[in-house]
Amino acid sequence: MSGQGTSPPAWHPDPYNQAQLRYWDGNVWTGHTSGPAPQAPAAAQPAAAATPPVVATPPAAATPPAVATPPAAATPGGPRFSRGFSASRMRNPKTLAIFLGAFAAVVLVGVLGIALLGRGEPSSDCPPDRVCTEPPQGAPLVNLTVWRSKDLGYALEYNEDLWSNEAEDGRSVTLIHKDGDIAMVIGGVPADEATPLALLDRELDRLGERTVGLTEDTDPADSLFGPNLGYVDGVGGAYSGAIDTPQGLIDASAVVMAAGQRGVNAYVSTLTTEQRGEDGASGNKEFVYGDVDSVLNSFRFPSEGGSP
Image (tube, rainbow, N blue to C red; front, side):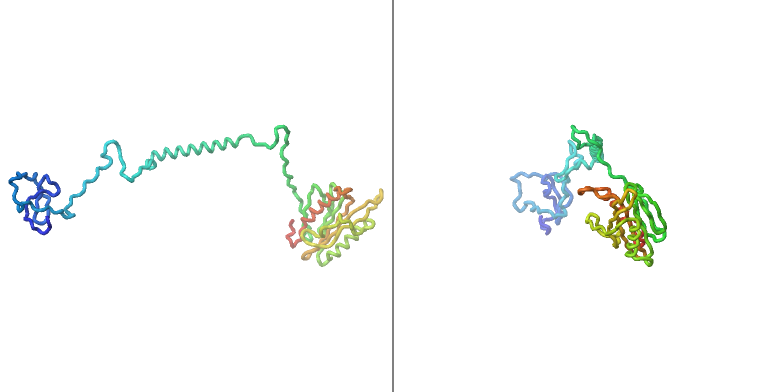
């Protein structure tokens, strides 16, 4: 029916259920219903004018609510999930605990396996048909002795296994090599007392009193890379001569150097009868000069901290 009240209030076939009657109040369908509509014989049907009014679609507000789908719990045969929903095993705390426990067990087995494999016999590069010795060990650490001038503050280091301290005072020290015939004197003076060049001349005069014919050594094999004490350049060179002994003259070699820095001038002089090897072979002279060089490299002036 239309919503304009063209039909008077009356009972009419229910537009929602044709098996019953619903009351029309002249404007809208009400919630009152009654039994099934009477079935009149076809011959007794009234004319078209008596035909019940046309049933109009009721307004949306009067539409009865849709019947909801029963919850999954009421469905026989176990739970079902609506379309688009995916159940996860991880939502079950018990299942999650079982999964984590199994995963931890696998990890633990793997770690134990690696540890056991690591305890196997160490691999060896030694062929089975050879007898191999233990690999060589590194050279032991050498404890060096520090000597410091009490009056001037310069310092140096020497190996007590190679050198012995034969004499010392507040300004100088005399070292004698234990395995070779070589003596080394290291000393110093205040800068206003003597220059490095004056110290060089003084040490050459002193060595000249102990040797015969001391002159500059022109042999390239005996030349110095540079006259220096520690990191400080100076003056000096290599010299050669002879020492007069009861058995006769013995060839001797000397090295004299001097340098200065910030108020202190120092010198070093060496004298040895050791000789170089013949035909290019190394002799004892090369070895003792190497030990001398180690001491001179450790020399530090007071301005450098006086600590090797």
